[in-house]
Image 1 (cartoon, rainbow, N blue to C red):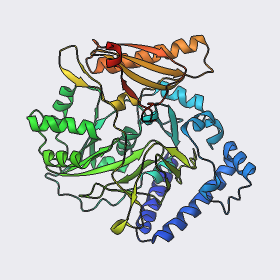
Image 2: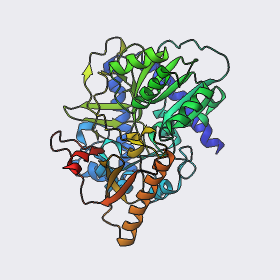
Image 3: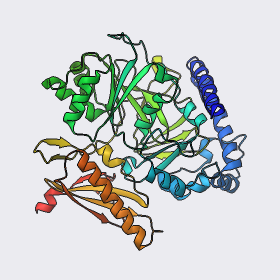
Length: 455
């Protein structure tokens, strides 16, 4: 255990030095470093991943001279279908990860007491698993320059409040809660606030904690901003805001900064690649941390090669994110994009059993995990009811299918009970497919079917 901790610290220090050096490079030098890292990763994948060994052999790829474009695009569906052949560590299997996630809801708990595991459905509604060794994690979480640090209003540990989904192995909470397990815990007092808790409870907890920094989903922080303006929330020590998980518009930024009286950073990250970028002070653009990521930009999606995850190599992984590159300017050699062009999901609002109106974050729905469920969608059917559509693994027998459906129902009851919404009715309905929106050609995690139901 001690040796593992020391190895992780050593990787962290080496990566920090590498990040400082990368900021001094030209773009050509940074891309040369990217290519060298990619070839090391490709060689590692050839030696330890049956999936990539087959691709390299079939395509006649020379790992000493290869480039990302020599490889095919990897989708989430392909990743999950070939998970056991892609992963490079014996003993890490799709089934074992599913069993771990079914049992564990603590984002700090590590698989085999070593590997950090993140699951997500993302905006596709399709479940995916992502695994990181201590070295992968250290490389993927290197600290980046964020401009001048604002002056704190008091002494003592830095108090950070995180308002998001916190009761499982999700990307955001896994990243944030790792602050409690490293050297950072000596300087930081972290409070996790579940976005699916009743809003009144969250407001009371924040008023008592009085954070220096407030981070969370953009929509969730805007709801807190409305409470701050109304006087129910009274945060007096804030010096820093950070949004995550959703697009943050200029009007969002203006509202939050004016409401809380401090600057805001819009962060960009995901389960597949962890922290990918962030907006510099006073700007809506996002600087990409692409010394360890290779981006390919397309009109309606992006393709990203992860250079730091040696446990689960993601070479040319397709993302639904639409990224618009612009001139890097003072942020060179890094790439810069316009504020993320993302999709905003419908946010279900119901009255709870006390008659108070409250919301359910799409991220809470996004992160429903039940083994055997491969994809899902929430369909609103009434003022206090919805239908939850699920696609099930074809390999499940009748008993396992029933167990998966009941598992989803149990998880939804937990979500509603926590929000005091036991009065909201729902049904879980298995289906063979969940089509995209015929107009936009994009998948919607939450669909409003109430008008159709009325007709």
